[in-house]
Image (cartoon, rainbow, N blue to C red; front, side):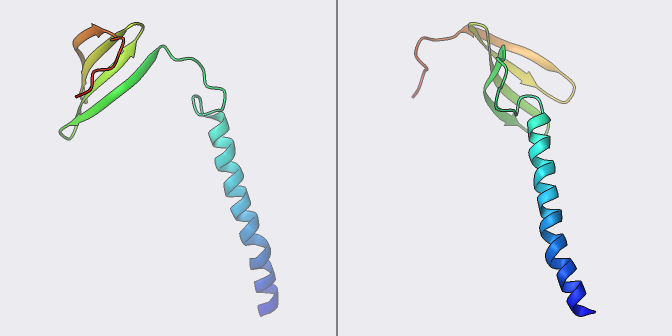
Length: 91
């Protein structure tokens, strides 16, 4: 009786683990933007900083401009925009 239980355990644990791995692998392949062949995006998130519990300040690249936006639970507001600099500004 105990040997049958151990044999089932030895067979089923790798089978369930393999099925979980296969399901996660397929989920990753099906999700848009996570596949190996990513599509070209028009909007790129450059940087984001949290402002409190629900707010965020973000720099978004769109076309040849950087947009500074404020994102909160109920709204998105454009704060500033400027052309993309030839060289990034660093302190």
